[in-house]
Amino acid sequence: MVGNHQRNRQRHFWRPAGDGRRHAFRRSRWDGRTTEAVTVCGDEVTLSADTDETAWVVAPSCLDCNGLLLREKRGGGGHG
Image (tube, rainbow, N blue to C red):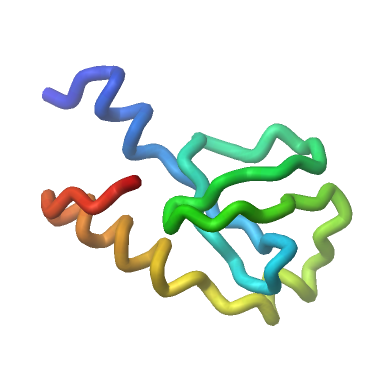
């Protein structure tokens, strides 16, 4: 059985960031305010309240975030 601490640590969301890429973030969801945030891959980016639908379509997913989450899912660690 997965404990609450492990379950919360595994939660993440994806969102377009100020660097033009869609990153993963270690929270269950974005709080809706413009803020500086640290991505799963360790980049410091800005999350903007005015992200439009085009950014979701055009922004490529961060391969580093994706790779780290896949390794964690497989039990290989790699979160930072």
